[in-house]
Image 1 (cartoon, rainbow over the protein chains, first blue to last red):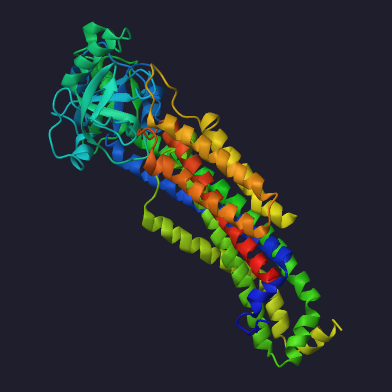
Image 2 (image 1 turned 180 degrees about the horizontal axis):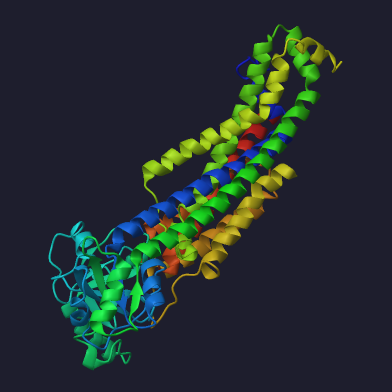
Length: 403
Length: 134
């Protein structure tokens, strides 16, 4: 017969009432899944948004008429597309007042072909004037991007021989960039001299990305950093005047970030509200179960008192039982939520259509600790009324009620 | 009876899911022009391992607790292989946006880990019950 000590008593009590213990653990588990899972998702979305903001670079994008939404989608949701100007837009834009820096980019959406011949966004940039892509690439790749070479985003499938197959041609990959949680992870970057070659390969497979006559001068967007003291909207007006084209499309990356942040904040706000309601409901359930079990256990507590247990010991017993339930529920909840979120982070990011970047290990560990603290605190709060009742001076009378 | 179901049902259900998932909702890349990618072989291996895990679970319904504990140890080893096949032993396609990388890989990891944990708990219960009975 095992000897039960005061230290082991709470665990023995929980073991002897498996259904009550299981019910309480399930409630704490559900609350922890909601708290920890929600916090992890919100943190990943925030990390993705910050990453997107860092990658924007430009204050204004000038794009062809009616392609503004395509350009915005390219910045946020990862939908690849092809669009281009048929005139010399760089020269037309250059004359406008308020432009600090300007660079051109060309966007081509490759074909979705076989299993490992993916549809990716090809982004051609001009190394001589670029201020958006290069600072980021050079933070991870110190060489110069040669003609015909590509720099691949984090999600691009680079083959064993260090190449990527696009339009039935193997392009050597000079470097692969770290994940940003944005559409750039599904893009490959080439210098502008490579664009005519890409177009000719696309023509060879019968799907010309851009007509041959525009292959060496096609520009999809002019990215502008405004001069000091100039607002992006004012510069857009100046460009319309200087170019004489009133139908140009304008995208304001800062505005795109702000609207994404606003929708993200709304999403997190609703999730927080739902979590608060859910937690209150769970707490009420736990509170009710603890209170009713206290009522059932009056004889048991009276017996402890007869055996010499002090009021403090009884309170300690209740507190340790509830903390243990909180800890077990917390561990199960955190394990379940981690298993559901961490391995599926790419799928979640794709389904959400929002910038989503898996946060670092340190933050995840901090959230794990916070989740465990939350679970134990929930268990303790639920048992507080019972503990207060037991610690009252008239405990003896309370316990006698059970006789 | 409840204990028996608890010790066998997870292996039956999870084993079936491990076998079915890569063939259905967590599908892998199609074989085109005779070119078979790593994920194709991962799906084949998962099919075999899943069937074995499910069969071990079914066998557990008809045996004594100490034998069932042994069967669940076999489930643990097979489930560990379910995790190892897409991650270390065979793998899946490298591209992070490929369906096999984005869905099949995490699905097999989650199903494998759940199988290991639930089978380990079942082993613990069965061994404890056997000791208590003595």
